[in-house]
Image (tube, rainbow, N blue to C red):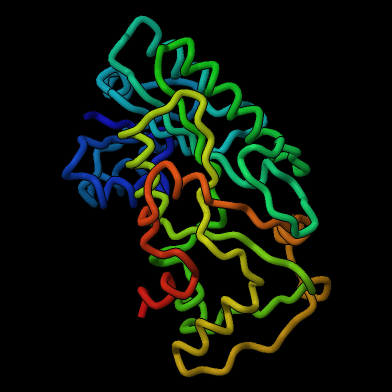
Length: 283
């Protein structure tokens, strides 16, 4: 199977690393410098800036059996229109996996949420994500490709985790009473993506998160424990000097259920069912 990753970022590259022997995987980034860097690492990469498509990129797209879309939608769009024009009339594409976010659920005051609950996005970026979900579903219908939406929790993995933050001295213990966050290891995103490609169900929507929503300070404290270090001092979230983006995450509080991925893809779909297993893997 040929897989093209529209947006060859952190999660897509990890998928390519883990499943490069199962599929022929290529992808697009926005600049030639990034293409050169990815090719030096052994990846097949092409330039696509969201508007114009190079001849080589268009050829690779038309050879794709599956499309993984991880491009975050901007106000000017995510390149879907250009991709649709390239692929219309080419019947090889059979499936699309769209990477969305659990941010489309908005704030639930700490309550549990499942895929059956309506999307109620609060932040402009989440509104765009939900609109993009619907648009890619329509595109899949137009192109005859089974389209699956994966709503991702906060991503961590190699190079992006609390163990490395503790080692670097950059970890912070930001506390908001009652606040929990959902998270997912990047390798588990790859595993669910693989399962979705192999079991495409048009219109399928899946929450991709681990089994245990948890307060952020608990994750930091556990990382400190694993390293035999003292955790950083607690800081109230309102005094933490967070950016507007950072503050927006603390304005939403929910517990996102992953029961559906277990039911459809197996009880062993996650290598890292909680942050504890994930953090131990970085030691």
